[in-house]
Image (cartoon, rainbow, N blue to C red):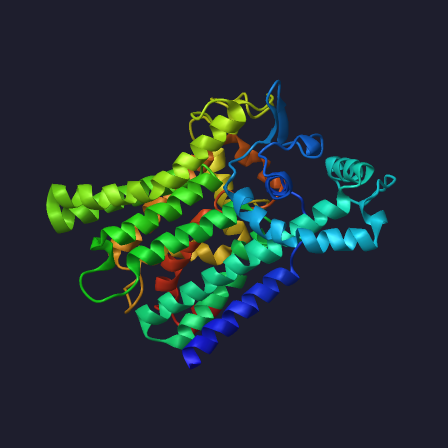
Length: 412
């Protein structure tokens, strides 16, 4: 009972703290979540002009410039909140009425412009409540679930419950996942899915090792497939995990084993990938191209192929160290993960094979994001694109934290 109560208290703590820091930021994914919850539609025509990432295709309607996964998940808590919101508006009709323009201090003029357009349409309160519903009902509980699963995983691997609890709290509150969970965000959701896939494949278990079980690779593939449904930055991560499945399969069963485990990983991802292709077909008339191919041209979208070019040295550096959005600028302790290969392994921490996968996956994500010219817009939002690497780098960091003296732990 004590173990269960520790996990339960951890879940409630993370959920409540995350919820306490919720914001009413309305992002592009919020509009699709509202459209799905209100009308069961992927079109966001009623909201056109409220966000720069909403665009219209002549003869087809308006859509968001993003993958639909986060919106599909966010539509569930939003739909559940609709009766309460309807009751509130019935009691206070003025909340849904058009309102005069106002101002607030922000160096980004579009913030005020879009807010006043929402007010003019009487959508400001409705959309703010939608943002809170998706945070309370999705981002906060999924973040809490991730912390609990990490706690249980580290407890099982190290045999030290107090250490596992401290590390889980550190993960929940001292990494960019805390920052990115304040409102609906596909990068944080992808990070959680990457963690879930990792736990499925490395959870300590009696023989045979879990990495030799096709069912685990099937489930991990499903997590990565849902990640791709949320954001295309899941592609390099899925590629590394896919190669890992082939290597593990070959190691334990030769060619036939590689086909078995690799096939299971692909099969798991197939459903979410087909859903993504179906969405693109429904929205854009073709299943094969992302939203960026159809959006109006911008300064960044004309670089390379719809904003995707060869990796640049500037973005390789800035995605890690830029003070406005660099991963290590937001969470300096994660930088210590890079020395994990040179630290003696303690019981329960990642082994050399797992460490190689972590470094390859994080490196692949960095290269991918350094080819994405839209990464230059992160100055407006803070760290985003490298957030999916956080759970993997944190697990490498654990190997360092348990090996160094206490003064070094506190310094990190």
